[in-house]
Amino acid sequence: MLYGASSALLVRSGLGLEPWNVLHQGLAEHTGLSMGVVLTIVGAAVLLLWIPLRQRPGLGTVSNVLVIGAAMDATLGVLPDGHGWTPRIAMMVAGIVLNGAATGLYIAARFGPGPRDGLMTGLNRRTGLSVRLVRTAVEITVVVTGFALGGTVGLGTLLYAVSIGPLAQVFLRVFAVPSAPDGGTVVAAGRPGRAILRR
Image 1 (cartoon, one colour):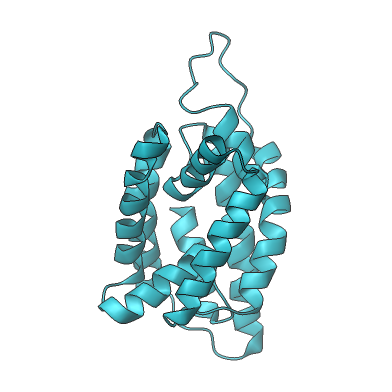
Image 2: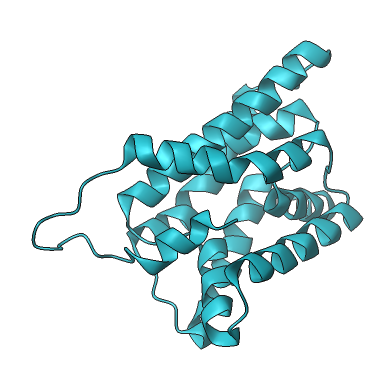
């Protein structure tokens, strides 16, 4: 839910979105669907790409597809656009920081990566290319495509790109949950969780 709310803050700031939401916004502009619905549809489509990559979804993966889009639309429904530089910058900074907190909570729960992160770690394993190279290539493709479709790229996009890794690392330490002694919480613990942080 916090992911969706933080993304909505970035939308309302009008100063640039996260890479995937640039694509979601561009698709929403051309389909007439809400951004949240587009986010859900794209998430489900990306999840289908896990099949040939032999990735295994967890509870967090499915929740990602079903919850984030709804939370984004709900927040957009009550949050007005920012007018003037001060509220717009405040929304942008709050959106990025809250997204970092959401990332830390999400990874710390160890219930599986989101569809987009799982796609990247799956491509890393299947191609042998580094996670950094795969992630960079995918996100550049997503941003360029989204921008061509009318998605918002700006200061917020750049600030998100350079700060989300460090923020996620900080919040992951804050929200870290010790492993169960019997190793009972191993739903996609380990490699995917660590790989996500290598931005």
